[in-house]
Length: 237
Length: 116
Image (cartoon, rainbow over all chains, first blue to last red; front, side):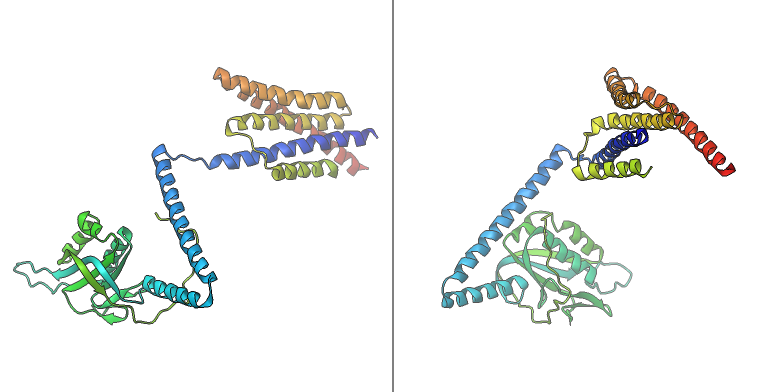
């Protein structure tokens, strides 16, 4: 009997020790993730979260109004569906776009030097980086030459020839048209200066012109959506 | 013998399930309290093997040592002196001594059983 009592006491003590171990373990694990952001970084993160919140609210409002329209009678819903369809085609780049925008012209530059200079060519890498920089700055529809750039447009160098959407581009000068709500930002600020400098290194001159009317062709190529997945939780960084 | 081990596992599971955490500032108190508890436990096991076990001494010693160790750590923090080191040293030494005695007794028992 005494032995049972001893074991009972030991068991109680072991329970308490185990409990303390577990709490200690949990506390030390929690303590490792410390928030060391400064107040400025916190403000910026807060601002980003607020912007995201606003964007999401706008989207919710947009889809709710669409939903209301679908809920009205059949005929109206057909019109709404057609409108949704054309909106989506516009976003995807499958229809022509008109509007004010920026015309970017890439010209070859010939240095007067004693050595023979190879004709400057625009490489896929440079073009991709220019397009990425434009997309980073504004939301825009872009076309290069006669080819519309969509999300899945391939831009490749094939035998030293630039191919966009599986079509070869003509030689320089090449016109890149950008239509977007804030396209003027590209001209006024220095967003494209770094990439323009890289063009200059390759003997390519980039000029930006504001145009009140530009027309972008639609994308007519094949669409490969097999490997596209919906991205959840997009943060506008 | 399995009952205390089961008790340990039960305590750990309970602790993990309840999701209780201690603020980082007090984590050192908890660690010293754990050390004191372990010392008392091994002291109790040694006393039981030496047939000196006293229930009241064991239970009061358990809680008293924990409170003493935590108090020393608390005092040390406020005095700006690492007094918790004294507790760590003391309990650590006793822990090793108790374990050594336990090991000796168990070995004696095992050898005597083997001789029989």
